[in-house]
Image 1 (cartoon, rainbow, N blue to C red):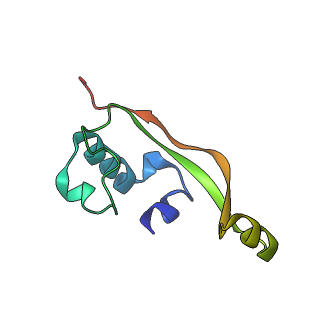
Image 2: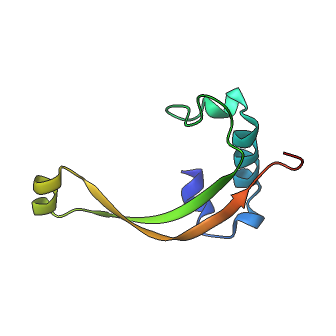
Length: 87
């Protein structure tokens, strides 16, 4: 839910997002434990970014045809590619 609120503003004024992404780049176990599964099981990423999507419920016909409850539309970049300094 924190990311939902963060995306309403600018990432540079949201220290939670910046710290979260920095800890993902570092591979901090306590932060990775917040996720359902580790998206970087072999090594921390060198770069990370955040995109913004808008989600919509599918219609009953689309749900029956595809099995998808949602469809999403890319709205843009929330955080451009970041890397740790000196890495």
